[in-house]
Length: 330
Figure 1 (cartoon, one colour):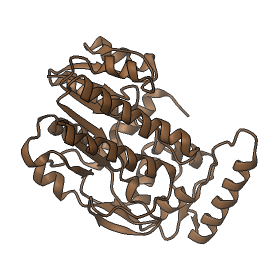
Figure 2 (cartoon, helix red, strand yellow):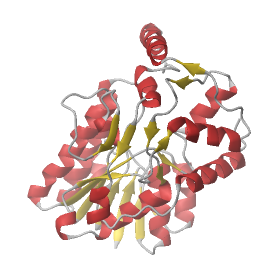
Figure 3 (cartoon, rainbow, N blue to C red):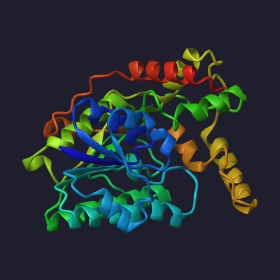
């Protein structure tokens, strides 16, 4: 089997491309940063550089490919709607069109459970619990991208989508690095009572789920799947575990949710009028994420993909901490 992995210069795409190579697959990769591809090329991947906003390039990327694993996209808590739309919707449209024109058999799309987030507590969210309105351009555009993917089924493309929650392990640059930086500056506080439960996903478990998608058949096709470790934990227990492992003082200061939300709103307002619209250190969405229960029901993935999380969250955190220490990043 020959696969294309987009977004392979990022954490999830890069880890899956490496995993696929280790499983003996023929792998073509694309990503924004050529230097991040060197380890994959050394392992036998074919690297094709270029912008996925270029439809002609994407068609060439998909030539002679059996399955595309689409991990590329615009992420973040801050930014303009048009930028998220370009990175998530228009790029995905290019990928879908290229799959159809090059007769790619299957498209596996990496989506996000941010789609569900409405600022409220949720436990055991199922794949159908999509809100009528989205809290953030990232969520709105990830959902639109999903619709583009599933719309291609009527033209014969086999499609699946995954919504993995808080993926971590060696290479994770999105979750804990920022929290560590804030705590080292003494700017991190527990929002609310600190008991809110959330899901995390070991990148190894996500790799298994993506690999299952390559081989899924029958009724498993044409569905979106929640992915997590299936073991919700209090968010701040996890944060302080990482702080201890990294020999950083634990987060012990508390801040009421109302105060944290108001401070974030002021911070956002200031950043909107500041030249260049810098990303705020506090955002309203960030405060909600740090305060609310948010867990997923993964029974569909267990049933149709035979997905069973094997690597614990604590093992994933240890892997991240060992890797982060080796980077010698303060």
